[in-house]
Structures are given as structure tokens and as C-alpha cells.
Length: 173
Image (cartoon, rainbow, N blue to C red; front, side, top):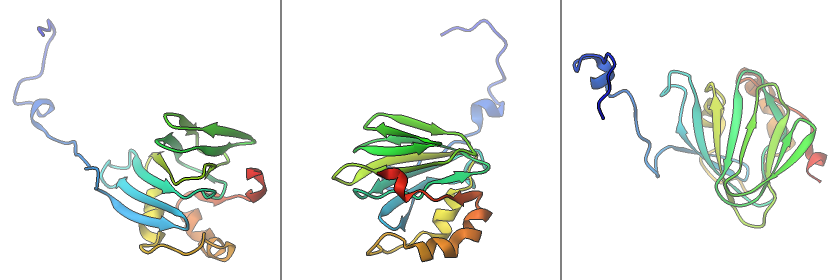
């Protein structure tokens, strides 16, 4: 392709700097939160705080507690299975290939509404919440979902990661 416009010199960093990176299929740090297994694939440390990315496997009838992020937008891409999302006061059914975007300050949550483990990709912009998973996620499978006592212990920690838990178990019915 011939472009008739001014281009940077071939020694300019736009041509020479290899600033990107790749995370392979098996890459990332595995963390567990109850019946959710996440591979933290990309962190804010790697992207200068721009975004973070996690790959999750969620057990049937499990998901996260409704919450808000005060500083980050969160987006989800359903790879496999069926999910129910809370978005403010509405519920969204989502399946393979569906994308769900939740802006900061919006009450949200997700639950695997299917009968098999389901895969969900999670994106944060800017980065931040992934650091909670890295620091406080477990490395061994918990026999049960995190109990209320565990969440109560984490309230201040979650707040430091710009997350606020909200009541909502009844919202899944």
C-alpha cells in the first residue's frame, strides 16, 4: 500500500518500539472466590492502569454479590453457558457471544443460570479491581461459596478497591 502522507522516519519509536505484549492461553494468575475461578490475565501494572482482563469459570447457580465500582467500568463477554446479569434494577439474560457493559456507579452482578460450569471474560477500565482478586482470592478450592462472614470481613478491603457490596440475593429469583 502506498500512502501519500508524511510518515515518521523508520528509526522513530512508532516503528521500532515493541511496547505490546501477549498473554498465552495458559497465562495469568489463578484465583478462586467461592465457586468462581478466575485467571487474572492482564493487570493495571501491565497496562499503566488503562485496563485489566480476567477469564472466569463460574459454577452453576453461582456468581458474584451485587455491587458497584465507584471508579471503574466493567464489561463481560459470555464465552459459554447462560448467565443472568443485574444492571441497576433490570435483569439481563445473556448467552454465548453476548457482551454486557456496566458503567461505574451502576449496581450489577452476575450468576451462572445454567446447569454446567460457564466461561465469562471480564474487563475493567481503568484497571483496579483485579488487584483485589490477586491479593485476596484463594489458591485452593473452597468447599462452599464465601459466607456472609467472609464478605463482612472484606467490606473495608473492598472499599479500598473501589467496590461496594449491595444486598441482593433475592434479586436472582
